[in-house]
Length: 101
Image (tube, rainbow, N blue to C red):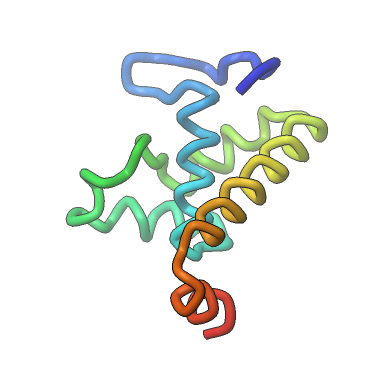
């Protein structure tokens, strides 16, 4: 993500980009609360399919607090664009099912 300083990075931590990607993954799986991070982490089967690590909900809240208003708005815009592209790539019948069920 251009212009975003790294979020505290350690051997066991996440970069800012990994955190944002993890947020997008959580949203794309239909979650809309921090508890969604924990639900997704509990999915051992899907773990190998995720493009980035997903932090615990408490860690996600701490990391999110480090972003300023402008960065949060940029992240939300990027997530909305990513969701739009993912939904747009679905066949029409599946798109309708996803959006209206």
